[in-house]
Amino acid sequence: MTDAEVEATGTATEALEYVERARGYLYDLHQLIGRADLLYKKAADQLDAVGRSELAELIRSEMVGVNVLHGRWTFQMVEEFDDGYWTTAREVSRAVRNEVTGGHRHVQEAELKEQNRTSGHPVHEATPRENN
Image 1: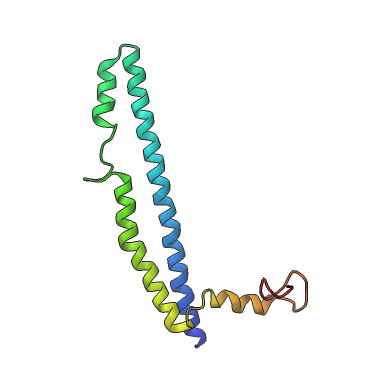
Image 2: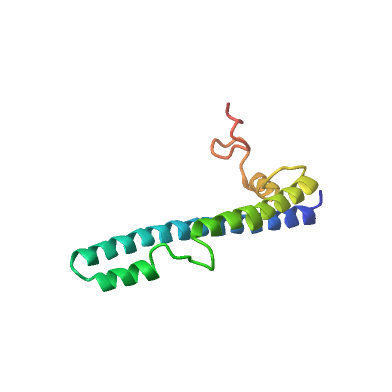
C-alpha cells in the first residue's frame, strides 16, 4: 500500500470516528428527551395535586409522550440511524480498510507510533505483548 492510500484510509477512518461520536450524541438526545418526558409527566401530576388541572392537561397534551420528530419518538430516530447511516458508514469504512490495508486498523497511527517510540524503552513498547 502506498502512503497516499494509507492516508486516504486514515481519513475514512476519521470520518467513521466522527459518525460514532454523532451516534453517541444521538443516544444522549434519546436519554435526555426520555428523562424530560418523565419530568413533564411528574410536573403534570404535581400540578393536578395542587388543583392546577388546566396546566396539567396542557403539559400532558402538548409534551408527555409526543413525537419529537414527525411520527417518531427518539428510540425510532436511534433505530433508523443505526439501521441506515451508521451501518452503511461502518460497512464502507471496513471495505476501504480491507481493500487497502488487508483489514488492519489504524495503520497511519501505528506508523506514527513506530516513528516516535524509543525501541527498548519500557513505556515505548511496540505492542502490548512485547514485554510478555
